[in-house]
Structure formats: structure tokens, C-alpha cells
Length: 488
Image (cartoon, rainbow, N blue to C red; front, side, top):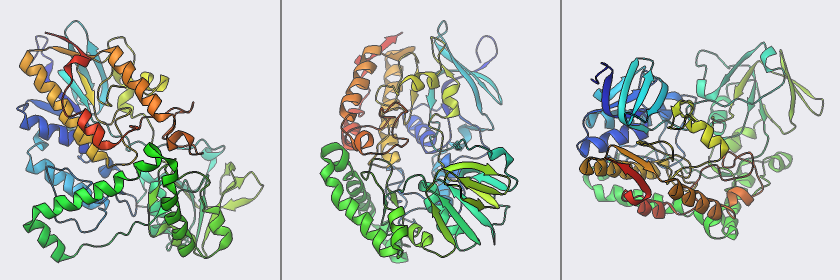
């Protein structure tokens, strides 16, 4: 307790998803056992707790989409589905004894840096505390984004976002409108298509769909992986290398896109019989400009007689229908939004730095950070998957583990030197951001002919790391104290 009887903890972590759980495990291994994880929900798991829509699964192979320090030989499929991934996260948290550090129902309401006392004052739904270090592991895919559609409030039917799937609503025999064609929609559309009377897919731009080649793993495979851990590491390495090659398109030369695009076109030709429908579903931008999606079931679902793909913009939503700009009107009973997630988590609105500005305000001005883990003006603050800390061509967990190693080394360094205050130097951050801008200027994310959440409204890189993920890991392999201002 502090002198004013407010609870004090050396380390406070926001979020009990993959980032927060991983941070807690590695901090405990480094001797930081006195820590608190603040979780707004009543369970851990982050995005894998929040997203429960039909068909919800990962688009990274399971052996790669898992902690390197906690391999799981018992994945039932090549690509893990939501319940199995959530069970995995829970099992790792229990095995490493970090559940006792989690405070459920403790939504972050406000976190302000106290310059005089060199600590963070944190308000949560369960009370107030202070912390020497504040670590943000707030997820990027846990808050729904809705389109602004005229008349949407007048709709008399049922509507919901894929993030808030209404499991109590029966879609059987209904006329269902799906707005959006992102990764979530690609997964749930094949699940609901056989159930509904009519499925209207409102598509703004066609995504690149490439083969997923998902399958159930054999009992023999799982037994072998349990007995030969090296085999699982080899499989993980193979998946890593295969996914990393997507960086060839953006980081080396866009001519490398041709084999990937040929694969997507072949998939479209093989799975969609109708020529006019194939034309609608053919992307008009370079693959990788926005997220390419792995699926073996999406295109066949759209080629069914009870599905219409509509490409005209929506003019208005009416009580029982949707009106398009070409004047056509389509009766619907239920609207499902597959329109993705907000780019700035709510928690970022509530982190207030030493000059009184929030992290969200800074990010809206321009995506900025140092290595995706630290931000000038926010002392004793680190985060996972900050701006330029995510990769367009690699598993998020690979990047998160790199960041965890860096953050743990930073806190270990502070402890060994008796440092009370650490803040990245503005010049170091400015140099990093400028480097990211230079490297991003020719990437497919900015020059591939599309608009996506990879870009800011003014055409800047929204936060992807424009280099190889293995280069990022080397760069974050140690805490570079020379880039920081420190005070004892």
C-alpha cells in the first residue's frame, strides 16, 4: 500500500489475452512475481474469448499460432478453431500459474502518469491502484466497427456484428444480409449459407481468396509429436518460412505477386462455375494490398442458388429492406455486420501521458511508437503490437513474443540499475518513425491499388512493420537503454 492507502503494484498489465498472459509468464520467470493483470471481461482469452461466431478459426496454422515456449502436440486441425484456441490459452495460463494474477471485471477506466511520483495512477471498475510500470496488451480485434449507413436505426429486423453473434437468434429460413467481406465474414458465410432461405452478400471489394488446405490431424501424428518434440519445432519452422515468403511481394518486388495471384485465380476458376459471379469475385488490386484470406469453403458457398453477391453501394437501410444506389431494393429479415474491428482499442483512449494527451490522440495524428513497444511522452509504459509492431506476413504471436522479450529485458534492466523512470527519447522515436515511412513508401500496402485498415485515411502505413519478421526479432532481442532517458 502507498501512503494514501491506495493499492500499489510494481507491474500492471492491461488485458488477459495472448499478449497479457505471455507477458505475465515471462515476467514471472524473470522474478517479477508481484504483478496484476487487469481484464475487463469475466474470462481470459482476449479476442478468442470475444469472437464466437460460427466457423471462427485462426488463419495461421496452429503449430505457429501458439507460444514457442508452450507447444501443443494435440491440435485437432491444421488451423485451430476458436474453442480449441481458447482452451489452449486457458491451459497455458493455468500451467504457468498466472490466473491468480488476473482481476476479472476490472475494466480500465483511466490511467495517468504522475510525474511527481514517477508512477501510474490507474482507475478500474474494481477500484484504484498505482503501478511503477504499465504494460498494455489490449487486443486489436476485440471491439466491433460498424459502417455508417443511412437509416440503419430504422431497421425493424434483427441486426448484430460478428463479434457479438446472437446465438439465440435462429437464421433458419430467413433472408439474411451480410455486410462486409473480411476474414470473419469469409468464415461465417459458409456456415450459415445452408441454413438461410436467402443470403445477400454486400461486397465493397472482393478479397483475395487462396487455398487453406485445412484438415483434421491424425491420432498417429499427435502421438508422434508428443514423443518427438523436435518434429513439432520443425513443423513450426516450416510454417514460419512459408508465411514469411509473403513478404517477397511487398519487401522485395511486387512481381513476386504473380504465383500467389495465379493460385487465387485458379481457386476462383475451380470453385465458382458462374462466369458473371467469378467476375464479381475477382479482386482489382495487388494481392497483399489488403489482407489475403485462406479459405476452401467461402467461394463454393457463394456459388449456391440461394446466394446473391451485390456490389452496388448501399443507399439506405429501410425497416424491412436495403436500398442500393442503382434503385434496387432487397427484402431482409436479419443484417449481420462482418465489417471488422476498430483500429484504436478503447484502452488507448484512457492512457494519459505526462503532457495530458492520450495514446489514441497521438495515434490519430500519426501512427507512432518506438519498435512498436514504447511511446515518447509515456514513461514506464510498454505495449504489445503498437504501431509498427505488427507484421503483414507473419503470425502475430511471433511478433508478440519478440516484444515480450524486449519488455522483460527493459524491466530487468531497470531493476538491476535501480531505475525509477524510463522513457524513450523523442529523437529515437522520430528516427524510427521516419525509417518506417521510408521503408513503407513502396510497399504493396500503399501502392497496391486498394484501401484497407493497413492504411491511415491520409495514405500512410497504419502500423505494419515494413521489414522481415526475423529482422524485427533481432532488433528487439535486447533492451537498447541508450535509446531511452532514465532517472534513478
